[in-house]
Amino acid sequence: MPLKARPPARRLPNWKTPQNVGHAPAPRMPAAPLTARQLTVARAIATGKSNREVASELYISVKTVESHVGQILTRLGVDSRGEIERALLREGAGARVR
Image (cartoon, rainbow, N blue to C red; front, side):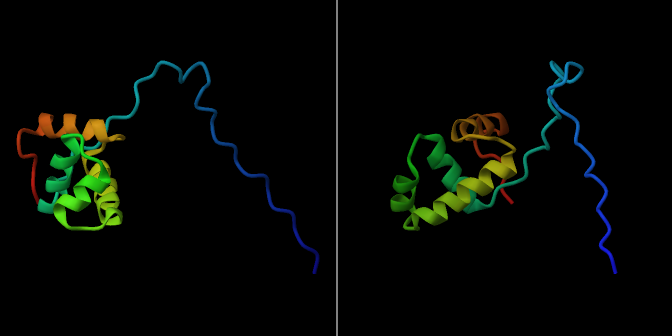
């Protein structure tokens, strides 16, 4: 039985085409509530502490802090540690806790 050739893959649009340049990015999802532990880590990160310093302060591993930071970034819809601080300020002193 002969093999059939697959049809060519459909090309995705080039997002840097002139008609797409200058358009506003899609709006971010509203911030999801943080767990109590994530809020504790987020507050420590917002004060400028490193993952190692947070881990030492909370008696958890650096890997656990890294995991929390990743989840915080996702839940708050931000891309950097600096934006965590701004998101906490925007949400109020305590942010929302789940």
